Length: 425
Ligand SMILES: CC(=O)SCCNC(=O)CCNC(=O)[C@H](O)C(C)(C)COP(=O)(O)OP(=O)(O)OC[C@H]1O[C@@H](n2cnc3c(N)ncnc32)[C@H](O)[C@@H]1OP(=O)(O)O
Image 1 (tube, rainbow, N blue to C red):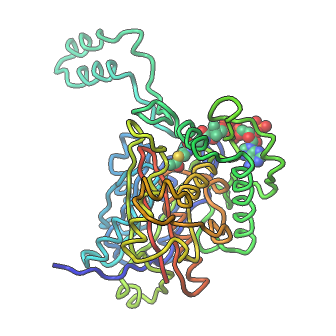
Image 2: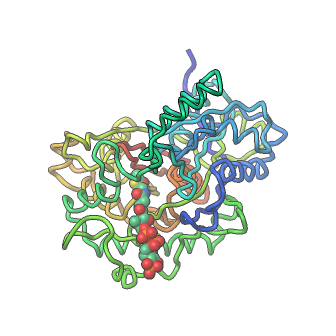
Image 3: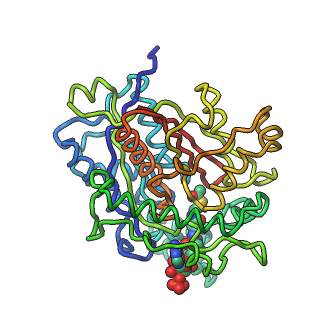
């Protein structure tokens, strides 16, 4: 039986993220993921090395991309003999892909691998009506022209209505924004606090670009060199002018400014055993030490859709004998400003910590000076499956710059799930 080895994070590469319908509107998932992968291959000279596996995923996928990761390898500069497969965990897909590679390295099953993710909200697949699909399948299977015509005669005018993917939860019919708006009300998250967090995200991302932080983490794509959603001039005053888009009436606090935009983009992360890194002369940025998933019952229970990380993090802390305050950096995916603030408030709340987490003491406060120090999804945008790679690469590099320390990753996902991780150096 294999025993666990340390998993080194060697670097990452992503393309800039762009608002849907923007500059990448005509790029497919394969185009974007190939660009992110080829940038990584070039940076680490991987085209003449064997990479043991590429794992990636997308939340919105066309049927032609049934194994998007493998098709991406075949279109990339990576050796075509690189095995690849897809994973899917909604907004945690990118991190789950990285975990899948990391676990195999930890067990000694592979030496080096790449995790990644991509999403295009501009190029979402539109399916035909289910009854019409069955008519088309029957016609496709028909053995003669006559049988084909007979099958096609089953088409009805109502079949023309297409099925457009909805940004909503299948079991509640509510969008993620509407779910988050309910949670924001429950936790009494103010509009001001959300706008403040959003403005800070833009300022910090802009500052990170200014100091060249992304120079070795990002390659231009289609002439775009920076996250296109970034507004360095964001301010609480400007954000306060926006009309609420989720929730109703007086209590509606969530706007286009304090919610992530629908986004297009892709990211990749290179992971390896320490032995591989040493043999190939590649410096280690940081190590992926542990992960914890969690899920909540947002359908019949009374828990918020995006609150699963509030449950996953305590598991991670306990297993690693850590306190919430023990980290140098916190990377909490900003799906919505209100969702970050609800999670932070839950960890400070004696009732939540006692009754939901079964703890005598609260988890405690997070120092906001250590939270999303280079900005996060509100400023960069959130191409669902690409966010995990952006966060892992950012945190690993932050730890490498500091030379030591620990970082906590927390990603909430549709379906009431969450995935969290500890990265250290
Ligand atoms: C687990 C998870 O991650 S869950 C999260 C998953 N993600 C989502 O659910 C995506 C949620 N987001 C959305 O659905 C959409 O982006 C929405 C509904 C929030 C906004 O959509 P739109 O209305 O099309 O946004 P749009 O880009 O037009 O912005 C609306 C206005 O806000 C303004 N605005 C947006 N951000 C800012 C900002 N930071 N500062 C100032 N103004 C801003 C825009 O300029 C625009 O103004 P205009 O109408 O005068 O041009």
